Image (cartoon, rainbow, N blue to C red; front, side, top):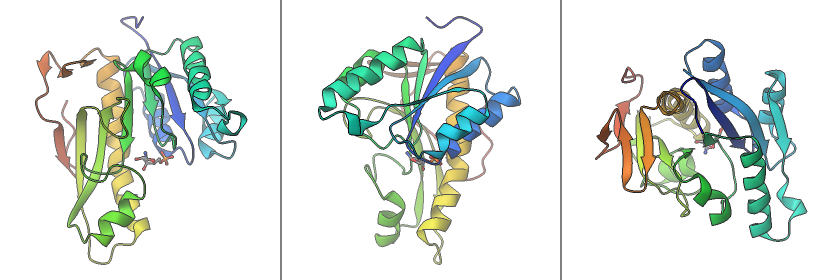
Length: 224
Ligand code: GRF
């Protein structure tokens, strides 16, 4: 149970961990409110995010999927690790694995994901490449509550970026990630402050049902 003063956050990742780093940096400067990252879990041993966690003095757990022929069992054990961490909030920050019901359902009111597209457009992988191939003029990122279907669940906040004519996957990714590093910590902060509630019938922010996601443009000031 989340106390007034502290929200225990568990972060799941598979790779670089730049979103984890954004959370750690904001926690270090006191701008993450009562959110405290208590554990980072990766399914991949080579995830740089694991080292980032260790460098910050945070418990880092490798939970490799190769050890599990059965997906259900992997998910059930993952749920056990999260539960043992007494997580008030679970943040999927580049966790490249679809989570099953065993893991999602117990946390459906406290699990969020950062996805590199303006959902519902471009669910799934390789979003930057697909956006460039489709010659879109606009791209972005979304933070959404997690439901058992891939990249679904109500969207909380999005940030839009322009697609430039000379963009490559790398330049576009970098532009999108700068926005990810703003909207994910902001969402964690709101949740930790008790301002954001994820309910079966939708998202509540500051006591109001969020009928539409909050939408920012690149560099816009975040709402207070
Ligand atoms: C991010 O682009 C996020 O949107 C996606 O995976 C990527 C993770 O990046 N889900 P990082 O590991 O946080 O650098």
